[in-house]
Length: 464
Ligand code: ADP
Ligand code: MG
Image 1: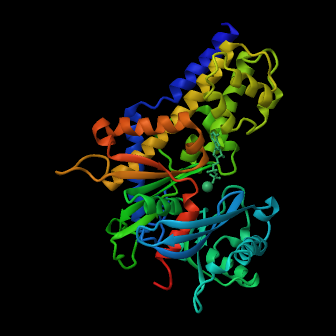
Image 2 (image 1 turned 30 degrees about the vertical axis):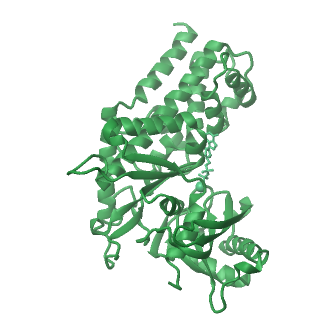
Image 3 (image 1 turned 90 degrees about the vertical axis):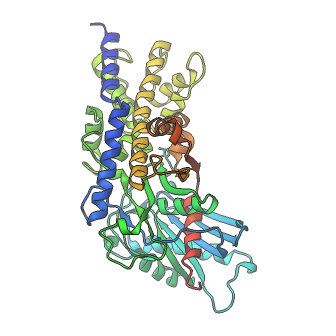
């Protein structure tokens, strides 16, 4: 057995284990639909939390006035102001300010974090033109995008279930996020009313729907992944509140936590999960999202280096460092169109410090990128099919032409990883069948989540 043959055996095994034939994807989609039902039936009924957002009317496009948003969900946070022109007016004016959350604040005291956010809002408001001052007797209104799992208690209140994405402030868990923000704003001397508390999927859905009325699902494919969609209120057994006038309710699925025996898991995925901060959780996210794809690639390359001397006698030391190979660099290699794969060559040199790679080896690296990205993208498409099925929008029923459905998309993975995006979109078409697929569209809604929160503040204004 030559080294090369051994390396190729590892590649072929990976390919086999990552295979996602349509038949398997349909099983995944069906499992997603089943879990959605279970999560809607009772609290804790499924790995899918299916959180009730209290958003029962999405922006219509007729909202008018000046509204603010705070968007907190990762390392950066944004303050936004949008001026809405009313019917057919659209967004007349929009301005934002971005700030980085200092890492020590992610794990420090709740008051310090919220004071920091409130102080940025205070500065933003103090610096703005007079014309944005609210009419006397009225307060400014704000939508708060807070992209962590929250148990909502109303459109503008909810308690933090747990932190994710590197945040960890124990004293906040179980507390009302809006109450904490409001107290901090008070301390910072800003008088703003929080009219809506949402997460990024809900914001993206609202932002998408504002510009395209056919938007009914929002999917985030970024560092992590999540989805939200519009559900019929009568189809939510665990909802015991009054039926909303619209008859609809937006659900934040928290689909990153989806799990099914049909998911094609490899030894690399099991290792990655075991070594993660949240073993056993976010399994779907670990197969499909930007935080993990590059890390899976690293694990495969490491095994090839160790067991088949893929990079020569020495195992590159860098290859042993968790998360050195990030998804943007994986995408750059995957997208390499130079005949001699120069990008792959330079990435391997920069990241792993291996030089003089053969073209043959570089081709294999691209193949690995393709196997891993394809599996992720196809599974994400299967998840979308599951949601469409739950909504009854996966097939033409009855007479007439079916309703058009648009998915509002946000996240760096979807936005920048073209091979991933193409594969995802093509797979969904393939699963739906060519004829019906023409009723489904994708709409990139970059930063829609912040604007969406401002729009939701408008549609849930206390002055309406
Ligand atoms: P977040 O999900 O934290 O809100 P983004 O939506 O900006 O942030 O997504 C950032 C993620 O998108 C990164 O963690 C990375 O995995 C992925 N990403 C960003 N740029 C690229 C790229 N060029 N190619 C592939 N993935 C990318
Ligand atoms: Mg984001």
